[in-house]
Image (cartoon, rainbow over all chains, first blue to last red):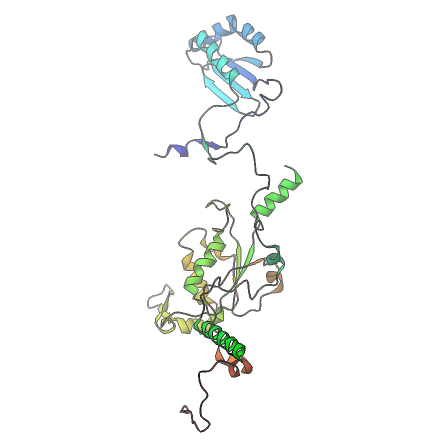
Length: 181
Length: 181
């Protein structure tokens, strides 16, 4: 089975703004969805009761939404500055684990699911000359020439024919005879 | 994307127009060179999924040269689909019916069985002589070199060139050359 068929494809990229000026937290928004009565949301409810306010104070750039909904399992949805949306089930997860996952999500720069690279190369220093085009390294005279062109269409480096060889010998002989006279 | 980058992008992916003079050329040999340009294989940006093929104009297809006894021995097969609908046309017959067909079939076959083949063939323009419409010839910016030297016919050589051709000896004045029957 070709696993790469199921991978999302994309290009290698990084949030280039971080590291030049101030640090910008790439995590923008977190939605915590849970049920008020169901047992699978017990850990999430504990997290909201005990740790959520501290987490919000530590990460003041992150917008937090808490969304109760009946009889559905708990879920974290994290949205990033680059448009990525990470969905994560927290079914039967204890509150400590949810805190760990949340702090991990807040440190990441986007969805870190593996992607299939569309191109296997990347450059930080693109060419100064610019990309190739049909006329790079071409003689400009060839572009404005009249086509069909006699010389440009002829065989490249054709071997010398017997006729040419003969004419060359005759010319040489004529010259040497003229010198003698 | 700045306007300069945009134009550079157009230049890189622009379709180029080539011209090829089929005079005295082996169609099966020259198809290799033509197909390379039709598919865009000669470009550094080539990729099978990158639509970068060029246009090729083939002129003088009337004057192609088949090797050996191929004019009389090569047969082109066609079947109408009905019982008894098979037909074998010799190369010289086909060429007298349509002087473009042998060149076209040689290139079509060289392209290989591929979904892109029909679309690549649309970029090929064949002409039996050198009368190419002005709107096509004005696009041409490059010429594909011929693969074989075009021989010169003796009746096309000027008289003074023949008279001044180097000789080993002069025929005696009373010499009578053999006349052809």
